[in-house]
Amino acid sequence: MLWTLTISLDLKNVERETSKAWKNIDRPKPKAVCEIMGVGSGKGKSILFGEHFVVYGIPSIAAGISSETVAKVTRTEQPGWTLDDRRPAVSGYKEKKLEEQKGSIENILSFCGVDISKRGIHIELEGDLVCASGIGASAASCVALARSLNEEFSLGFDDSKINEAAYQGELGYHGTPSGIDNTASTYGGLIWYVRDLEGGSPTFEMLKLSDEAHLVIASTGITASTKDVVGDVRKKKEEDPSWFDSIADKYTRLVYRARDAFFQFDLREVGLLMNENHQMLRELTVSCEELDNLVEIARRSGALGAKMTGTGRGGNQLSLAADLRTAEKIAEALAEEASGVWITTFGR
Ligand code: MEV
Image (cartoon, rainbow, N blue to C red; front, side, top):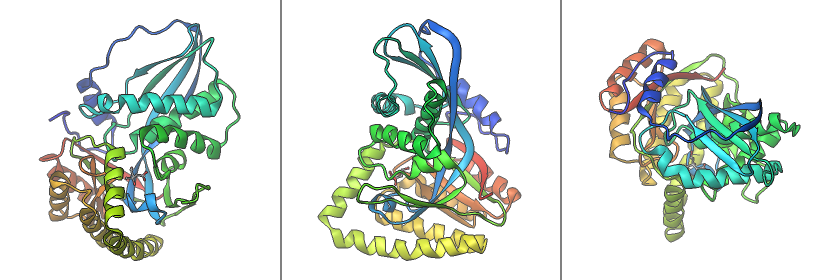
């Protein structure tokens, strides 16, 4: 097991353990011109409905979670950029994503028009968001970096522009991001999101709930490549369009029912729909044995609904709980099998 589980609303306990487990590569910090720095943050996210379908312009619902990544940018005398990535992460995550991360940083710098050819920048990444597939870690770091550059170089970006910069960063991680991750990370809250397939701006709407809802997030500890899994689904869709369309049609009917259930704060119905959505993701072949196992444990332990979240084939699993006590019970059961468990809330 990578880190010691702490089931608590105080996520810092989990963070402390994970930080210890992750070994940072020591690099000398480049000499800063001055210690003034730009600071920015981006939230983690959980997709409650519609991962993968969202890539094809079908509505999805995501929640920003309270854990976040913080970026700090300092100007240096040397040209180029250097990075000290101190984010807590599941084993192997950073190594697997490193090349994509470099492309992502280049994209954001270029979008922001920051010239590092004569004098450069030193980037530090930290925060309490534990990097794992499915939690929006890449998007959170893109939003955080865009915000820190915005502050350091007085770019005058509003949230919409930060979201655009972060989308460019996400392009470094995988070729066809739907934009849901960077949007949830920029704005937080509960969002209804529809990608524009013509390349225009997405449509999104903040969904306000009458109360907050409890989520349990469990990690399989497996890092999946979003690029590979999204690419594989695309290939399968192209080989057999009617197979994909029949699942996508079922999902489209489901997500409108989920939206209504959220407006009525009918969490029992939301949970049942999450279960159905998980089955559809299994049909898309993006779940795996480890995720299915966590889903089963969560349901047996009293979850109103449980599903995989995000890319799949590893990454994270989500459970909806009726209240904090039930969330703790579910988290305790999941802790037997998961490599990390968090309790969080959304909707307010
Ligand atoms: C990844 O968090 C969500 C996917 O739907 C990809 C995307 O929306 O870009 C799998």
